Image 1 (spheres, helix red, strand yellow):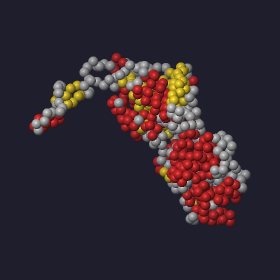
Image 2 (cartoon, rainbow, N blue to C red; image 1 turned 120 degrees about the vertical axis):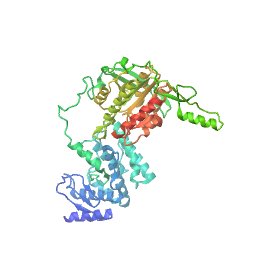
Image 3 (cartoon, helix red, strand yellow; image 1 turned 90 degrees about the horizontal axis):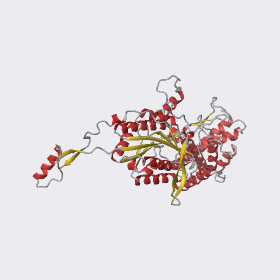
Image 4 (tube, rainbow, N blue to C red; image 1 turned 90 degrees about the vertical axis):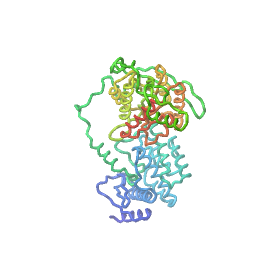
Length: 535
């Protein structure tokens, strides 16, 4: 260790409040992020063109701020990669603000260690660098709406729970991630550089757990399947990813509710409806309806005064009432009940970019949605119900794309799953407009019971909306309008980060079923079928 490294080690231990080793591993490339552990800081050579002493000084001060103020090894939980990058950047700014309060010269040393943040955000790394700078230094200008919102929320939390509470900033991460999704901001799949040139790799902050490490290793080592791998090929008429929005379309205009002004804005959204060729006919309708003329005894009415059989339990209760000198309140017979009324079910699938997120076990949310759609089609067909499968995504209020994947009367569950997977994921989720169009299509059906079932994360967003409550409130109004017309509306929500508050607020707790991962999907489908049967 050189004399300068010895001085840096003393500085690190003094600021951290405990002895911490400073090491220079030879395998770290110049400019690589430092690796911070509880008892050591692994420091790489400085990036080319930077002052080596100033850079190392800043890296040590930054690491010391984490050691003193950051809770180590917080569970990653359900946080996605972008959420982790944002949370780590906000934590960098938080601990530097805290350390700067006690040692004002620390912030000057950090600012002098690297170039100023970029003026334009060409990538997520640029956005994170801007975010880190404006949160750390309140004197810097916030150059766009997103940065201004981040600073405002950060300062509100700092003034409330306090900048010393790391967990208090988690809602800020959720809000900013949602905005980045609306702005179509994507991460570099090979990883993003730290928000500051002297930053560490944030491994000190997070505990990924054994399962996450195994899954990551599996994803890195898995080879793509060979071209002649087994399994059925996709249907010839399935849309290639990205193609279906360019199919011929019919347009429809729909209103949208603006809660802040309390007004329904007429003809505010334009829906482009695309249709795929009909699926091949499955089991003939005549065969599926065979035996409909026979008396359906699947539902038996108990406690009747007359009937074709005795209800033994009710007969015992009736005899006890008579012995006690009471008039029996219920009958002791069982009679056959009427079969459940026929139903028409429209499955409305969210095809926005969010369904491309990983759902565990190497599956995407879209794969779970396809599996759920196939299971619901099979169950509806077995019950003699008519079912259709539609999907949607949006690119602003003037472009809500709506796709008829399978028309009413479809019975081929496997073909439905193939079409859903082939449709791909893109753009945003203007749920209210899609619900209004789905309701208009469902009104064409004459079945006594009619239901819309939304499949997806049910988290409305779009690129031209910056109020987090606007689209959920509009979707809730669309649901109420459909229910006034005696259309049932339910949701099978694949919860993002385990958060089902938005779909529950839109559909109601009694009409929302949540599936968090592949293991819970079958239970969620069973609960949903019960809600449709008795709702």
